[in-house]
Amino acid sequence: MLDPRLNSSWWVLRLAYGVVPIVAGLDKFTNLMTRWTDYLSPLAVRVLPVSASAFMHLVGVVEICAGVLVLTRFTRLAAWIVGAWLLLIAVNLLTTGHFFDVAARDVVLALGAYVLAQLTLVREAAGAPAAAQPGLATARHPA
Amino acid sequence: MLPRRLGPSLWALRTAFCVLVIASGVSRLGAPGTVGHVAGGIEVGVGVLVLSPFTAAAADLLTGWLVLLALSGLVGGGHLDVAAQDLLLAAGAFTLAHLTRVNEREPLDAASRERRTRTM
Image (cartoon, rainbow over all chains, first blue to last red):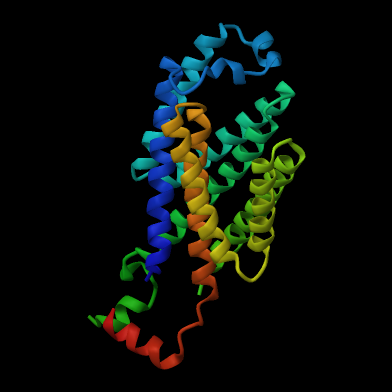
């Protein structure tokens, strides 16, 4: 049985890591929160085959998909994707030569995604049916 | 007790928040302005507290602080992306507080465990 405090942590992390990427992803098309292309490394801009704004639209689609996936039953997989994504964003920010504070926060957020993946695993294990545990089912419900 | 699998998660969150908050506080202390210095001092204090035996209380403080920062960012209208980051960090600090409390709880004694098994 899972401790209720772990369950509430899972829900808070799941909602936060589901909703915020969706909002941030949608904003890649509107730039209401910030001008996202400012965060793109000059190195990346040189390498990209498309314009910075077009690339940001692609980033937005990925973030929306990842956020939606977190809110589905594939939370654990999505948490790994979000964590890796946040680390990539941190690397991009480091190569800009600015925004080191934002990069550091993204690394901590990636750790939060890792914790969400681990909590999901523990939660799934705790919720497994008794029949899945060898010996236990037959001891309680003898044939 | 905390499931064994979550041990590294607790350790990682604790270390990460300690380093992040102390670095942020030191950065504020280096900038001009009394308000920034006071905020920086508080952040360094909370960062040290995260590594002390009072991790859960420090994580509660951090959660409240980050939610306030996010709200002020949302109300002020500037740096909404940073406000969104603050909300995610607050969720992480909230989790750190809960993982710490679950970890510090005494393990169930044999009689309690037996009663719990019977009621399941």
